[in-house]
Structure formats: structure tokens, C-alpha cells
Image (tube, rainbow, N blue to C red; front, side, top):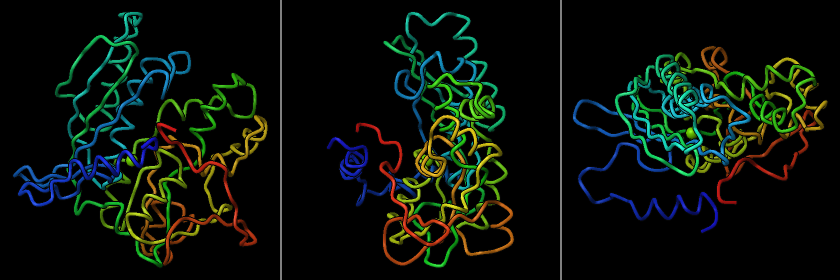
Length: 316
Ligand SMILES: [Mg+2]
């Protein structure tokens, strides 16, 4: 059980509440769970940022870290076509975190709580060996929740914004080469994920399935395909990239296509939907859902492209 997804499969069976009366509307395995607590459905998700795993303090300020942790958690709520409404935050604080860094962390969390709507209503503070920020966000579906399991053959695959920018920003930071191309704009994109409240509202009436791009487009689309029992074909040349993305990738010796499709932490929304002007207005069409299983990536000539890595995996 070394793999993240093997662990999730086992704990799903261990925590399975089938047969009990309080079965969730959506349970383990989607971006967020959906519960009926008596006053309509509530969406809930939790996300952890661990120092040394997701960030180091020389790569991101404590203010940006707080902001990023909250937006990353809210992103899972938006991916369910729901709006964040409240949050609780657990912080583990190492002895070398200064009061100034602590204040900045809280300022970043507060700023993102305001921007996302996930007002902080509680949490927990503890001493710990490294800085961790664990954010639980609650929200309410705009209409019907959009899960990962509703994709149908014939649907288009769409993505908001651009892909690869956050992974490129992290690559820039790791090589410390801020002179290449538009490097600083990509660094900012990694530190401050985008807000998708408006897109989440639109998803409710358009999308058959949705996921946020956190582990990499290819891997996250594989989750949608597996949950929906379908396959997908992605067109590499249709992937939307930021201006100067390709030049900056090449300056750093990175493959722009591989980074777009397998780099994580974009926190864009990927969704499937029948073709419509509304779907086109919300995202760029990057592929289509087909019968079968798995995701195939093709180039302009229709030839399959293979990647060594499909995306970020914990425990591997
Ligand atoms: Mg997610």
C-alpha cells in the first residue's frame, strides 16, 4: 500500500458507511464530500500544506503560504460547483517561526478567507516539528453538485485559465533563475492560485463532471475518467498556456507540453460538458470524452504522446 491511491481505496472500504442511515450524498473519492446536515446539502473538504513536502519557507513568504493554503482548499469546493462559506484552520507551528511570520501567515489566511468567502470560524494551534497548515472548508452547492463521475462519451473536456504556469513558477524558484523569460510572473502564479467563484457558479448549469487541477491535468483527468467509466483524448496543441510560457520553459530546459500536462498546482477547474457557447465561454476545449478507459494524449498529427510521469503522487 505504498501508493497514495491504493491507500485511498483501502480507507474508503474501511470507512464505508453503506448500510448505515447517514450515508453522504457524495462520499470519499471526489474533490469534496457532500452531506445533508438537515438544512440542505453542505460540501466539506480538507487540505494540508506541509513544510518540506509542499513548500519550504525560502520559496514562499508566510503571507503567500496562508493565502495559498486557503485558496487550494476552496478550489476543491469550487470543483463541486459550490461556494465556500466557512473554514476552520489547524496550524502546527515550529519553534523557529517568528511572531512576525505567524502574523503574516494569519494575514494571508484572512485575505484569502475574504476573497473566497470561506470565513474562518475556528481552528487549532499546536507546536510541531515543521510548519503545517490544515484547512477545512465548508460550502454550499450552487445547484446540483457536480462530481467526477458524470462525464459522458461525446462531452468536450475544458479547462479554465492556463496550464503549467504554477509548475513552471516552482521550477523557476528551484533553479533560482529569475532572469529567464517572464520568470517572476510564473513564480507569482505558483504562490497565489486563481480564484474561481464565478466559474464554480457557471459550472452548475454547464458541467457533467469537474475536478480541480491540483496533481496535474493528465492525472486529474484520469480520476474523472475512472469515476465516470469513460476514456478521454487530449490534444496537446489545444492546451492553453500563458504568454511567454513556452519561451520560459525552453530557457529552463523544461518540456512545455509535459509540464502543462503533468505539472501540478495550477488550481484551474477542468470540466466535461456537451459542446455549447456557455462551455466555450468558461474554458478552453482541450479534448473529448470517449468510450473506453484511460487518457490518451495526441499531437497535431494525431500521434500518441507518452509521458514518463503523469503527475504528482504522495508516498511514491
Ligand atoms: Mg481536487
